[in-house]
Amino acid sequence: MNIITAIRDEMLVPIHPAGWPFIGLFAAVTLAIGFFVDAFFLIGVPATLWCVYFFRNPERITPVSPDLIIAPADGRVIATGVEEAPTELALPAGKWRCICIFMNVFDVHVNRSPFAGTIGHQIYVKGKFVNASLDKAHHENERMVQRLDTGDKRAPHIGIVQIAGLVARRILCDVHVDDQLNTGQLFGIIRFGSRVDVWVPEKVAPLVLVGQKTIAGETVLADLSGKRSEP
Image: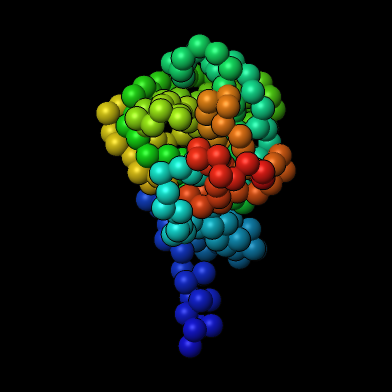
């Protein structure tokens, strides 16, 4: 019975509300065209199932600790370097560490808060739709920029940037300035391939490596206590 329950829970994953219009559209087109052209079902059915899969919103178990910065997205780490933060983040001047997570079209695209705090700044920046894995993407691509004010002296501000990609054309953010977030709390979704950057103080050592896979709400990006210093 435990095996059956595990399989059921794995298959019956909740769907993010933003996905239902697309799932309905895919299904309707499949039925409408397939009614006249049977062969279209060979394309429409897999496409509809992929749409369901794309908008899945699985439950996540977030580590309970005031020291941990958690991954905001499922995907692959493509950078952990130090550089000047974009001015639109409204972060204090100086060098910041940017941990970049790239999501392909098969990753879960629901985004979760990397740390607890209050949204102190938010701005939507119009831009290009180049490949989100490129270095220039966080300067040129369309993006939702947010500054999380944590009240923690070790990292009083954390930048969170949802970046549209080559295929992505819509960033959805469900929180606003003055909203309070808990670590791991869902705050948005990016449709069809994208990237999320987390900006932390330069001195914060990353616990992930370039190329490593992350799980939103679960993978530890950094430990502010310094107890874990190696990825």
